Length: 214
Image (tube, one colour):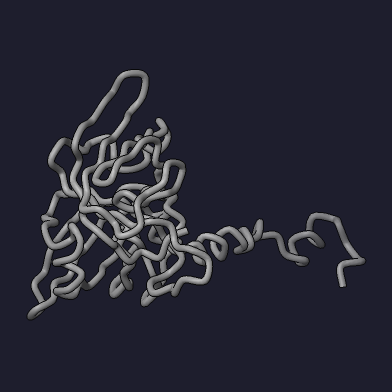
């Protein structure tokens, strides 16, 4: 589990595509070294450290993950947001982020608002339906609050400190991003009763199924 509070911005060192996608990520060392087998969110995607040293690690990317996220389009030199999995008892400063990206979005507009800026992100209707105004969303692993919402888009506001500490400050219209909606929204959408068939007691009575309905 993650919080959506990015700890570092790393860079893609190498991209290998033998029998599957393997990414090498280069970063400034953490005070506590990475361990093989631990989880790191890379642009919001939970990856497992396969090999590592003090300033780099490699991770295998599942085909399903590659198809659902933007990781398959990364190139050497690209900057990526990094967050280690939250430890038990650690403060939860953002929101609960699973690192299971729901899909890709596209930056439709970047709107300056004084020192801040607003990003309008196009997304599928399914992802928009799982979101609520003033709820949370993770964009490339960054926990943000939804400030605007439509049938196939959502809006977030980015403050200067977030722009400077993550890759969001460099986003431009047309860029693709990873989206993970709030887990609570997914469960709520799944639990919503399906629309009724439209049958009424009156319709059943007219069809000859009289009595016993009250």
